[in-house]
Image (cartoon, rainbow, N blue to C red):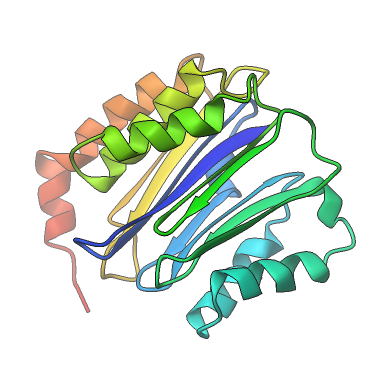
Length: 212
């Protein structure tokens, strides 16, 4: 139903998460991150409590594997879930329940986690990993490159209608938080929106916000 990516930029310390799906408003429930803590994507038959409980556990110092184990063990509907988690060290872990709709994929490595279900082909997740590793530029642009490659490789089997990208650097609020809730070509619109927030007056406004 959805394909998502988590990434950690060691040069800046930023955490990012990006996602796309065949339904509307994927940015509201699937992608989550917190500065200095990590990132998480909860999908399949989404359990939004995974985000609330998972980020709290990460902030308390639990590692990615422990968080995934705790979330899925406590959930009687875990076979319908897919989740990927990245902790503050960049360690990753994930879960794909047996009740998910094929095709299902997952890629886990230090500083990078990718997962998808109801995919158009089994090439989606590898294509995203390769595109992210080859892309240059800022974290949000690399995340967009991964989403684009995943979509071109088959994406959501239904096509995609919504997409989102979030990044957190050293502040409790996001550095980038953009989403397209419903569109014929959401990645095109997401790319245009990124350009609007990354440069110009809005970028200057964000740069001048109060900081801790």
